Length: 162
Length: 234
Image 1 (cartoon, rainbow over the protein chains, first blue to last red):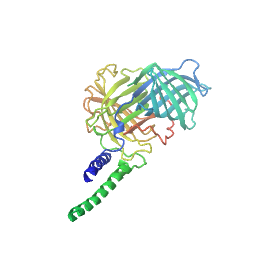
Image 2 (cartoon, helix red, strand yellow):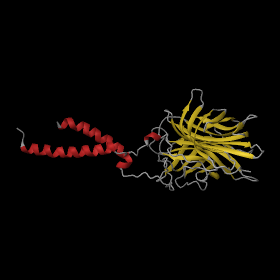
Image 3 (tube, chains in turn red, yellow):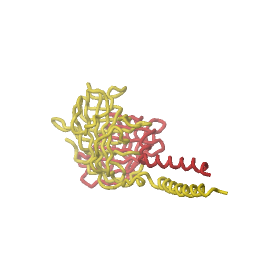
Image 4 (cartoon, rainbow over the protein chains, first blue to last red):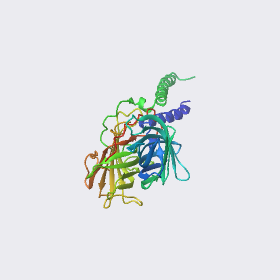
């Protein structure tokens, strides 16, 4: 009887010991998935607008890590430089926490999360907006709070998917 | 018929078995943090301890910083990633990438280099989203397709994740080094350049965010509204 019980009890104790020894989450920080990094700038095509603002150019910075199952962590900052209806310079800023992301077969990256839209007109930024975006080697497209921002073609900087 | 002594031994062992089962069950039922008596506070992250080459950490970030320049400052965008490789047991190895793009026509304005080494410290009091800490990442400028200012063999990026609201709180600094990529010195804290490096460039985030965490969770339960961006850099 004792011999029969010894093996399963020992195995359970071993598993429990490992759980206690290794901090939770440690293993999950190591492993596969994609790393998506980018920083750059570009010019919008003539006629591009967002929320009534004529867009001239934009800059972006992104750091995103996926785990291969759709879950991801990352940060997006996307800034649009434009002119208001009365010709004043206006910088619109999108800041987002990326919570899911997928690298597509064509090498582009689709990501989603929750972000903030700062219209740069003196009004308070609006937070808690769902956003989705696509990053390619040639540009970045973002929709926040259901408002689509025209694709910013990248003319400077880097985007890398590893 | 059982011997009386054997019977007593068996009965006493039964008690020990029961105790073992209780201990094991507790270990299984409780998370590791609870079982070890650790508390997960949700207050503002405190200043992390010294960076360690053995800390398992994951860094993501994207945003802008202002670069001091004459006659006027320059706006620069950055994107940063770092994580430990599979099978990591310590020693500072890491993978990822540092992108840095100064939006002005100045020499050596771009950085695109793979991260090879990292030191990190996780905040003792992480934010509600489980992030907070600091990290230093060394990237190789001699790697194929890498781009760095001429004459530099590596860059060293330092980040602070001080708040879920990155703008005005988190920090991104970059140092340019003539020395090869290496594990950042244990005394390095991002304020002054280590031997063989110049800098820093950058500072507190103008916009964007940096996250230092121990795992990919995919949850951002309480994403704050980002701080209002400062008016444009001249």
